[in-house]
Image (cartoon, rainbow, N blue to C red; front, top):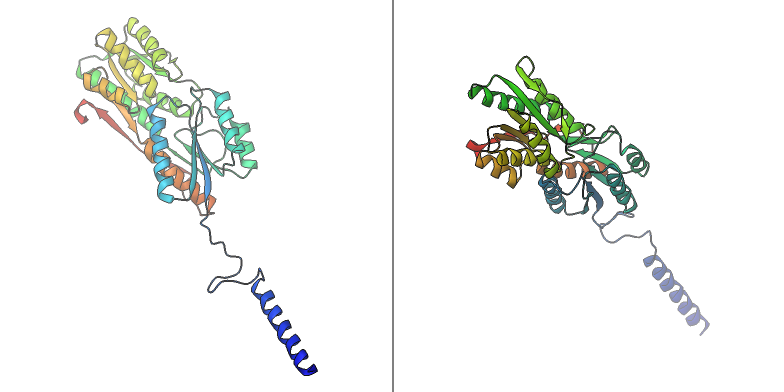
Length: 317
């Protein structure tokens, strides 16, 4: 009887030991090493643009969204002020930080205005990637148009059109966004360079903050001064210039930047000669892919990526 009791106790102890081993957190399922994550890694990425007014930014968002959907492991949010405003863009960056952003795709209003916010983001370990317009702060990569070269192309297009009309001198107006956004400043510099050594007089630049209505008023004043050409440095500036030329009944060569339905309509009607079409979808799409690579610790080969530009005129519509 005693021998049977001892045997039963030993069997019970063996069963308890087996159960304990099966509940050990260090054990693995068949073929699965200890500690390996089974869930797919996911990332939180924000896009912050200058504003939500321009179709240009809508297209950047579309490109970023497409890449996020293809990658399939991205929580993606587009934040932007309703108008171009440094304080509002800083607020957007702060909201992204508070929202747990791991990477931010940023089109900066100016080179220095958002520096403190970006420094805070960097301190939180957030990866910064510039799209369209960089700030003066280190980033993983900048994806943008070679704006100075594109601006010079715009100037050459206008110069050729004026000379084709037998116009070799006269005043030319420039409608820009502001004097601090690096991308539009570079476009203006390139545009002015195209007229060096000619008899044309490039007037003092006027700023409309990218607002089409304000830009139209500026362009209308230029027309009153008797200009032969007007250059618009971004979408709103170009729409404003084209509408002013249309209202005046033509007679002025208008060249601009960016592509929107309104700009294409103005070119089709002959109010604008041409526009320099960027590739904002490429900026958003490739920017998102760069963000994920950086978050995975992969090497980013190029600090600067030229996303290209093409000339759109009536013949190409």
